[in-house]
Image (cartoon, rainbow, N blue to C red; front, side):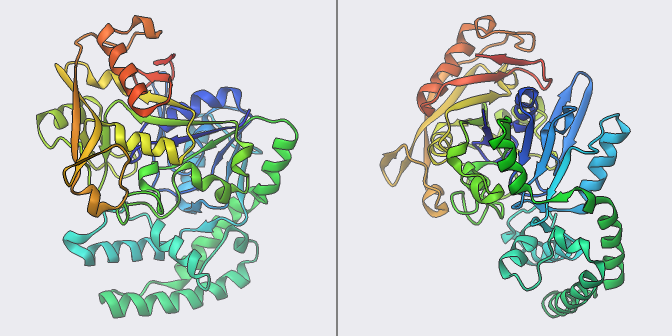
Length: 424
């Protein structure tokens, strides 16, 4: 059975934990989009693993890990992650495969990202400064793109990099008054990257089709969240890739109909990092309570996340565009101690009630959430092992989310550990 796990909100929903659990019965785990701007956290016992490029299934020994063609690979980050796992006794030798067609994030992409954000001042998008947008821009522009396959011929790559840096340095100087970057340093870094990563580079599209034809179970892992999708999210406050399940076919070359089940991951509330509209945001004591209790700080940047009530309109939209079959609801335990809980079931926009999410930010900025209020609970949920063990009011909260979103909730997170997951 082939499964896809995607985020239904603005990222940080807990996909890493869900993928890790499902990877137990999957033979191949695939990252099909995004870059090192993603942060997936897996907690096993007392050990915490923060991954940015490696599929979350990497923690499972014996699982094949694939980084597909639509991922933009930061070699520095990837090598650091590989070495970090090795130091903790987890080896990826012989089970990590990187698409030869994946584009590469280099130092000048990060520099361009930083300079652009700084120049925008208060109008900045709020990127992670990881060079993701500039790398995808070079991919679309084609002329100055570098792919993993380019590492196979370092002589040709060096000449290409000299051409690219000549252009980039002129750009940085003219637009931002920045000092030029040293091309020899970039070339030397690429030599080091090539030595480590070329042995893992292959045609991952062929690999995946061979695996599926051979009856292997494949798990596809999305990065960020559906509301950050470049084409279907809250543009321009989005990521630079198709982070919903709509990015899967182009991201790895596997048709959508070859996936048997789509699982959408959402928190029991809503969070967002960076700028952009957020109708249910609680910039108050409630938001701060959720932030502190849920440890809501970015895995990648450490930035405090904006927090608010569960937005059923947004989640239902992501379910529709992503063909989601079932939900995993994470962080239910974080809401313990809040006396009354609000659920957004609709928006009021220009005097009309709307239940379909307007991805256009001009309309979304005018959206006023229409809430239902449910009683909260004080009981500790972290030891619950079944749905029946949850307080009745917590059960009612979960069931009402199912009704609003229109899909069953099959997994419930009541703590960060792998074991703190209820299968409903």
